[in-house]
Length: 224
Image (cartoon, rainbow, N blue to C red):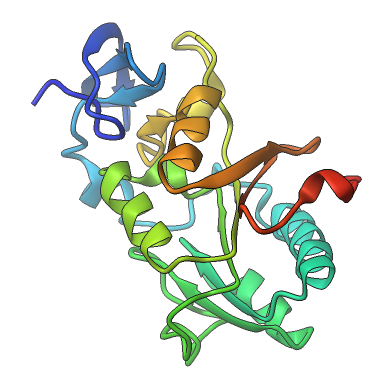
């Protein structure tokens, strides 16, 4: 249907682009949440034949930064039980476990190379859900976010590149891999926070922190 897969708003045609060097795909702008999305992604089986793509050259440095920010936040708020949603090969999960956090990794597509045995959490309500460079892979973001928020985490820490009217030469579209299919505006993130009664802070280095109302972050300066 021609409605937004995140907020059910009305879509307008934005542009066409070639995905995986062979599929001509329509990109739509949502008039309500101002996000950009592909038409419903029929090419995902192809896109994930090789989960880790040669185009993703920053895997290690990204995990290192994600770990540092997650470590600081978890220590600050005394978070112990952590679920890494869309955790890829489980490297982040492994590093968190090595630092004595009770961390588990979930990923629909990737093999848990580093987190074998730690893919089924032993808790139902995580203190923290981390979700790094994963939400742009959601084919049905409304459902996926519902799954995340239903566990009533105290906080969610995520990264994704926000959409603010970039054109089809935006490298974050990742046309070569075909795995990036939904691009959220700042407004969309604020809408999801409000829907589930979370506050949201957009941190300096591209991290987005959603947290339950009982934490008064304004009293704490996050130098990130």
